[in-house]
Image (cartoon, rainbow, N blue to C red; front, side, top):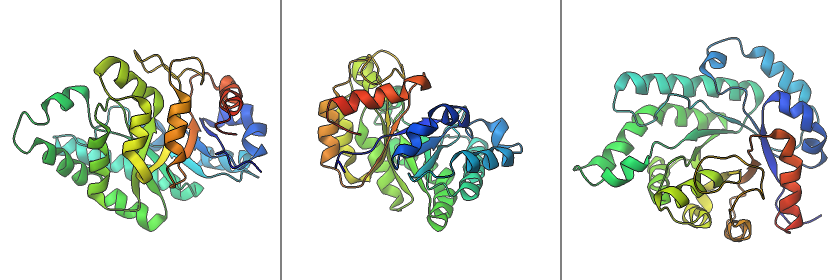
Length: 272
């Protein structure tokens, strides 16, 4: 068997139905995206769990989920907002326990505005860490006991080191890094962030998850891989030096192009 990394994908259960043969042909990792909305987490999600168990019969890859993020800020200055975010994380962990999910993707608190202002007020950098800990400490501890890992995805992050230091501050096997290639490309093209491969270089072995999507450096495109301007050879060269075995998750808008995206990277000799 090839030593090239095996690609997975982010999908809803509806998308799994369309791509099930591809998903099951190898031990491909899957990131479920049905449990993001608050309406789902606050409602009866058990039927979705039962449907997932049926569709994933025979699945040999690792199973993850995208956690809640819409309208949420894990480093909010408002204690009531922090309490709400903490509740959503507990709900996500409930779903993870029901499906034996071992990874939950959540969003970074760092913004472009924050990058330019972190040193504009005394102790602002430390304050971001403290508020994040107040939001997530209990969830991260529960994740440790549950055998699950939260991975922190870059959104507007301009300096990948900020997010890395935040993860390091938890000193927990249940908190690691994620890279979204399209988000990094946006930051490179629109805010002057370093190139996408530099994000992987900074993450090192704290990296346990990657969203693979293509973009043009202007917006969060979620184009099929090969349709944008990302230097995939450079990015995968950085990944080759990382031994933490991150999940490589194709996350594109048009789910009918998942197989084509995987084929593009396979034809470059980068993955399978």
